[in-house]
Length: 318
Image 1 (cartoon, helix red, strand yellow):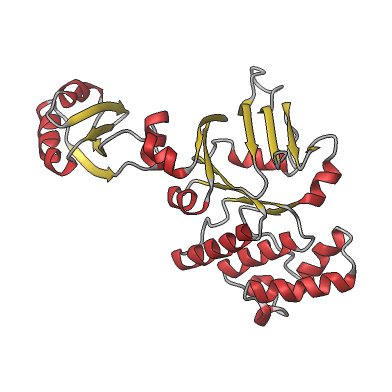
Image 2 (cartoon, rainbow, N blue to C red):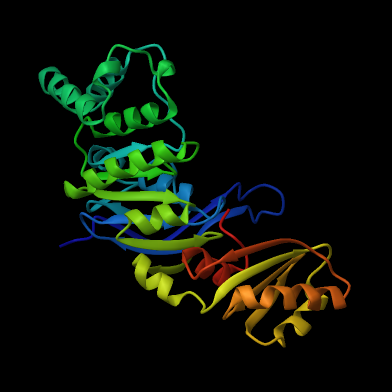
């Protein structure tokens, strides 16, 4: 079966004619294939190129070079056709503020030429599915953050797209609203839709996605199932010690301590992988003090998508 989404050497440079002419490179030769019905995650920190990738695939951003295909249609040459296949949920809810919830859905359907009778039926069904039927006549600014995001998903589904794009869909939601949205996304995935989601939440990618691409600075660093990616994470617990000065002078002494698998410096942060973190923390603090550094903060993380990302990039996701 042909890929639902295909990226070939996708590159995007913003403002290439300004300053020294180099511009800001958002994507650098990205290659990806996403299968029909797959729940696919783009995982990376802010500025990694995730939103630019979604922008190109949804025809809102024009690539500098390379190609992207959605349901076999090229996103630049066949932009109108591509829009018929996709639903887009933006990072921040952007409903029309004056019309009611119902009118927001009906207006969206009219943009895609959905017949009025069909649109009315879908509107009723979607409001019920997303538990917004009691808010049908409310204005969007009267909805909670979670309700507004559910409205955005309902709106994106009014023309029955086969591919759904979500850009950081749970940013700003409280934990309860985030979990409720996860259940909605699982339901949509179970209906066979292809879903592409950007996120910088490791747990979100781990819980929802069939496969995850880890991206940073416009490049693909890793691609596999969450389970396989976590298996690639370095062994041991990640111990991050924040020091009161540069960590470089401390690395060599720390790396020699018993139980330490590896150590590296990133400014004032000392990142250590240790077999039994709880047993070595006191030793690490003392070793840092012997080299003139005091520890101001300690963070521990078990092997995970986050520790894999740190090992690949030397920095954290958030």
